[in-house]
Image (cartoon, rainbow, N blue to C red; front, side, top):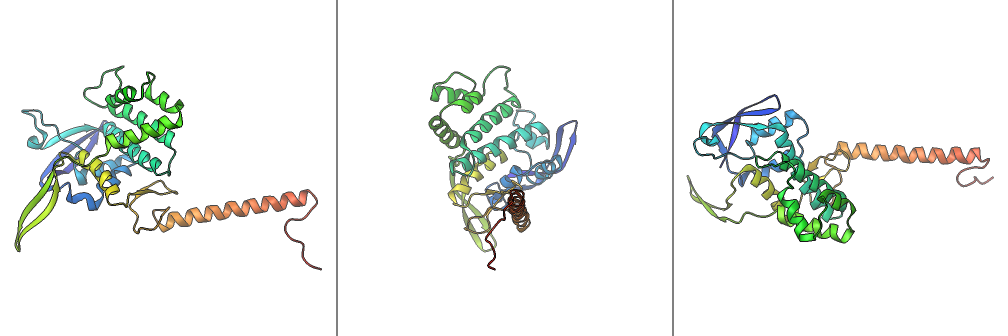
Length: 278
């Protein structure tokens, strides 16, 4: 179970949250409502506030004597949440790159940069010390340079291997699973259950479950918003409005190209297209 927030305010770049301990929800059951997609699509401060109010903090600190779940209050830096979102979007970007929908090198470079950004927000951050996963990559692929620079310049074969390794290491199912038995008015109800320790862990697990269900969310070709496809058919756009806008723009481009060809033909003293029969 995970607490929502009764109140969320932002002051000087810091989120101040009051936990709604009487409104806790099950992280596994929340999957069908797609909080991970909502988090991936957060762009403005208001959208981060709305997400935090609806789904609670990404994690809770359990320091003895100052447990946030017991105190019912917590503070988080807004740029920390933004760094976490960039990291999760980078993971989704790499998954799409493995499918051929995005550039493989660019996706790996973005993930390496997102790792640096997220590590800088950590309580264990040390100036000049590389993020742990960067060190793991250096040891596995035998390079000494900065991983971002390495990803920009190394051969495509190494990019593909590092891309696959990065996705496999950072997206996985929970190791603890079993059955949850709930008593209802009609008797017992049995559900498969996973042990998820935080909302942050649940968001990463939801990316894994998207792949398990074989209907992963897509990135709209028009507005770049991530969305769940409504059918098994291939979809490029999240709404009819985006599809209509993209179609109109492509039609205008074709029309402009046609006009340019006609104008060029006239300037050259000829005609464009087939001659009419006399």
